[in-house]
Image 1 (cartoon, rainbow, N blue to C red):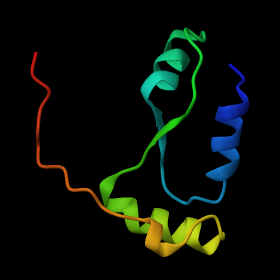
Image 2 (cartoon, helix red, strand yellow; image 1 turned 180 degrees about the vertical axis):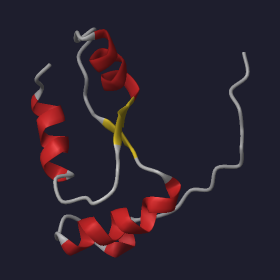
Image 3 (cartoon, rainbow, N blue to C red; image 1 turned 60 degrees about the vertical axis):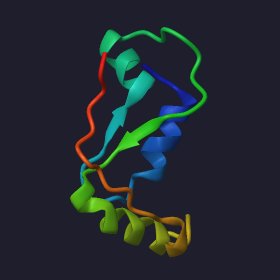
Length: 81
């Protein structure tokens, strides 16, 4: 499956040295091997332990400033029906 948005993410993360995953709606479409609906963004998942590496990689590449990064703690909340 080809998508301009997915290609842009692939190019953006080309120099990122750790693993990352496509999440959200695009992940479902990739799994289903078809685009089910239009998308306005691409959700990218990285491991929390790699957040500093994300900041270092993209700051070094000049794609963002260090001050744009903020950790949001996961307090183990769960969705309820």
